[in-house]
Length: 290
Image (tube, rainbow, N blue to C red):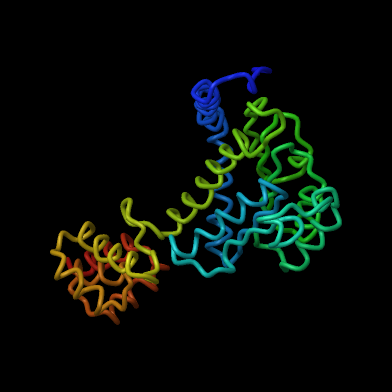
């Protein structure tokens, strides 16, 4: 790594950062099989009524909180289904809480507070692979028979001990030595994107490549629901608006209504039989209609 960063121009600094960032995706690629295994584990657990928890400290904890917070608006999940927990509590998201990451007992305590149990999944996130808080959280989760996944940014990791899946994206030295908000943070964000998004796709929260479970909680998302209906069914804007209204703003119900000709109640019942999976619901209808 360059030891003369403070002597360089702005363009030279950002070029160096950009070159380093280019390596992250290739390093993540090496772990795709393990990431896919983790996705299968998460999807299976959520399908059976389990929950997904992210435990981390500092930047790692913030990444977990960010991913968890995006699941309800993107996939229409209950806020308790995917939860992010950061060492030191919510205040640590914006301001460092001294020594919280060094206390494994706090990790164990947070797992107990969350009521992590058999059937749940606990993901321990630690760039260094040895954060005491995360070690404590994973140990407690294991003792409660939860499924466990570790995510680190080094090849030499303690948190991978005894977990079901260990994901190690060894990104190497940072441009600014020790600043894990850089490549390590980027790698963690990429992996967490994959874990939650792929799991939700497996659970039927996506139809084609459309996020059909999006919650229409503001004007932007109300319009997005209409566009999703248009793309999925080929109807006009006005028709999509009418379908969305009849479906109570639920794009999934609207899509099934349009494709099957069923009313909103019957479309909803059909979806519920298939746990919200549009493609399976439509396949059932079409098979029975032949």
